[in-house]
Length: 123
Image (cartoon, rainbow, N blue to C red; front, side, top):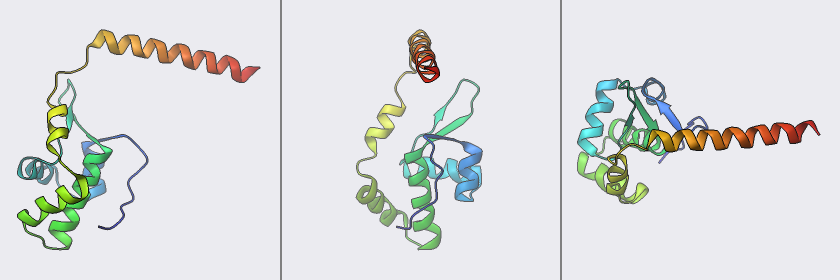
C-alpha cells in the first residue's frame, strides 16, 4: 500500500476528503455503504466529518479499486489485513452523542489549563 500525504489533523471535513482522495461525494457515500469500513460523524447541521483513520481507509480503497483494479472481495480482505476488524469502528460511531453539559465542563477545564499555561509562560 502506498504512503499517502495526509495532513496532520484528527478530523477532516467532507470537502477536504473529496480533495485529498480526488473523489466525488457520491463515491464516498457509495463506498461508505458498499464496504462498511468507515462511518463519518454527522454534526447537528448535517455536515459529515471523517477521522484520520477514515481518510486512510478511503485512500486505501481508492488505491486498490482504481489503481490496482482489485475486486470487492479482495478489497474486503485487504481492509481486514491492513485495518483489522472494522465492526468496532462502526459500533462506536453509532453510539449516542456525548452529553453537551459534559462537553462544556471539559471545555471549561481545558480553558483553565490554557490560562494557567499562559501565566506560566509570562514568568
